Length: 411
Image 1 (cartoon, rainbow, N blue to C red):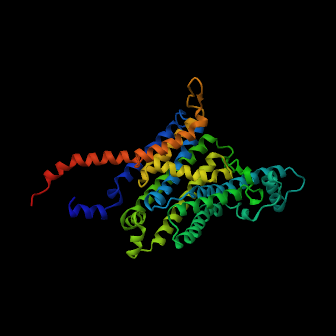
Image 2 (cartoon, rainbow, N blue to C red):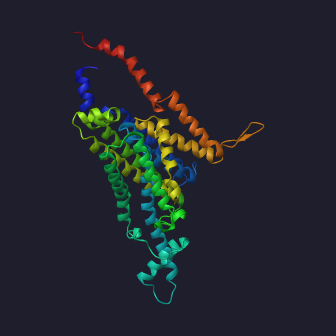
Image 3 (cartoon, rainbow, N blue to C red):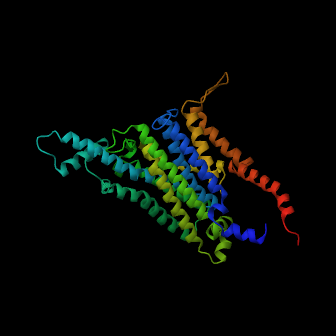
């Protein structure tokens, strides 16, 4: 490549420097349009509402995998706690959904009373309705802003961001790296999950938050339409996040975080503030994970502490590894592929395999198959599924190379 072309590749428009961005956005747009046309809520009715929700949740998992790839594949931080930020985002929006829906139910039930209920009586009724399952009848302090949608939406971003900022600052300033940092992130996730399992955590303990698929005040709107709304929102969030992550990893900033991944000590020796770069990436990806969780759980309908267990973050790392870490599209491919395959195997759609003496039921054996797939990818295809696209791209450039040399002027 000539010096002029090299300079243009570094300073040109983002879409010119990263053609995969345009390809990804076009494919995502066509996918969204196709699902919309074929869905029950709008179109031909060939895709069921439940499957539209599955696809919407898959897009959310692709978004959190994108965040995981940025922090691990590009910056070299193997975080085993990003699903905790995912769950926090789900709890933040779930609190408002549960409060607002319960408020409507309680107000309607009290409207038939001889005297109109006071605001305090309605609040007491809401608290009893929500927390009666754990033997409480008052709102915990954590629910102080549950009545306000704008404040809870702000919490979706601020709470995961602040938690990641504080945790990252304490860890990075102590220069904790490698497997020790992974253990710390996993310990943070485990501590949060164990806390949420307690009934006095203020989030209903093991019962979690339920009924999140019902949007307050929109009971007349069918679930087929609501599922499409969330599907569109998930697709939009994934497209914007992909473009933003592409911009982050391009240019000088992207070069620095890759250098940190490859040789942190040398980057520090060159005068860069390694801790600041790592803290920004860790906090930024935590926010992306929180947004993904806020879109995921209204489609799932329920969230409980088991969703934040450390195993969920390990699964996330497996998805990124299978898709190909260090490639944004690889993370999306890995999460989407494994998520849909998991739905097929665990949903009873995969036929059992009768071996005579034993019958393999995929509902029980899916996690074993996933683990074996991770081992196989690690040993035989460390670049993951995304590496196949790189191989095809290199072959295409190799075929164009001789032609380009023929057209180059002779010196």
